[in-house]
Image 1 (tube, one colour):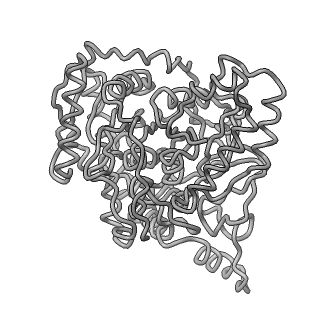
Image 2: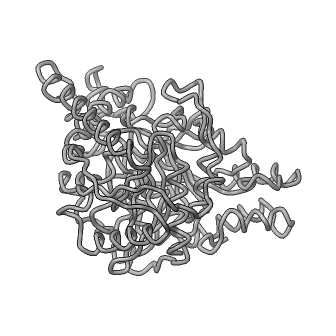
Image 3: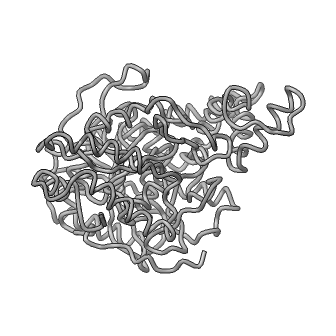
Length: 488
């Protein structure tokens, strides 16, 4: 099954009509993955046996005509726990870890009869912007196999862009869904913080992490997010508020919608080609009846510095559990208790994870807490207030998702500061806990550009509404990747 030319609606119609069974769909999906994986390297594990067992259960009863996810194979980022299926967070530390329960989002997908086809590659513990910090493999961008797919959810994005799966789950801490969605020419959403349960997601930065969705179309994205959203008693940060019908918002009508363009998002540092595509996208939104004005989010310029203090501090705390004792990698060279801690963590974690743990530990240390972590929290509040001020008068904020298109493999991974700046346009939405989506806006030198749409808290409906109208007007999802290159 090549998902480049299908969507949930078209495949579901075949299942309901009896022209296709869930078992056949799984077989065809695995065949497509086997065909593309030597080029793309999007998956760390494929669970064909488990997927076929789940498909058999779906085939044993009539397909629910109203359940678009029944029988659909979905890719799961490898930091989301899957019962009985290895979950590594792309780290040597968890190389052989097999969970005994599902993350809530996986549980909810299974309740909709969706099928977990496998686990996708990622930056180690979600720390990175190119999926090059994975301990196991480097995923490639289907539009050009010599370029990165973005990160940290690069495997989930590449799997959808390559037509290996119809949709996938990722996590977004500072742009880890939207940036790879932009790089791969697909749709990716980070919902409002609290909209989706984080239970069973291996934590990076607990006040920032959110589970979200990749797909080729806005409608498919809305369907999957609908399935995984909602309150979860097991997650204290899960919001106990109703989940609206996201697909009902997809009417293509944005007449009268008030949209803001943050001048800071279109400033120096955004490549001219990317800026030109976003300017064209803004004109498209105007032609659809929206009012578009320029605004200022002045504290956005501090977002990257603030993010890396807060995220690294929280990572330092969250990753302390990986100590070589309770579970995870233990160094065979350890002779003493101190050896177990030091050697296991030194050998089990990659360089980027160590870098962030050390940065976070320093920021939280005695004598530096007030100067760094406390100050970062105060600046975060200023970023939140910037958005509140704009959203008092506007429905959405738009701009480029990333300042550049996908860069070459190996080009930036050894320069952490340059790599961190890739998230300069996505981090503010995480700091404020707002819903944000990237939709394809065009191509520059054959590589996709993403339009970022940021909404008010718990107003994913408006984000989807604008994204769908823009998608229908541009029809970018009719484009397919070239799979050119491949020297890396």
